[in-house]
Image 1 (cartoon, rainbow, N blue to C red):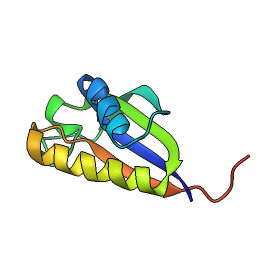
Image 2: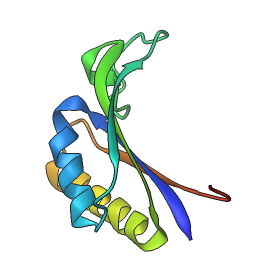
Image 3: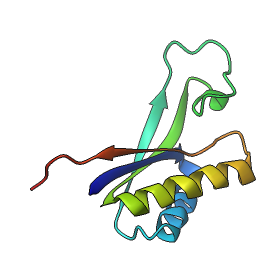
Image 4: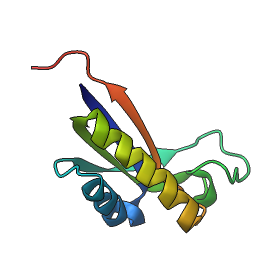
Length: 102
């Protein structure tokens, strides 16, 4: 079954995200620059991936239409990578089902 995998991280991790996706067997994907906004931001929330740099952060969003197995492998790689790097800016990932497509 087809899935949409979405991966979010800081812009400096764009090449790293690319490597993780390829390692998961995902060779077709898109990366888009984004600005993460937190207008209600008061104080750093260390568990929040946009928090450490202030009220906004330069980010990247990666997404791919892929199979369930590759999407699951990518999330596993992201989770392990976050544990190993522990750099204060963890990658975030999620998978959504594709119910219909043309």
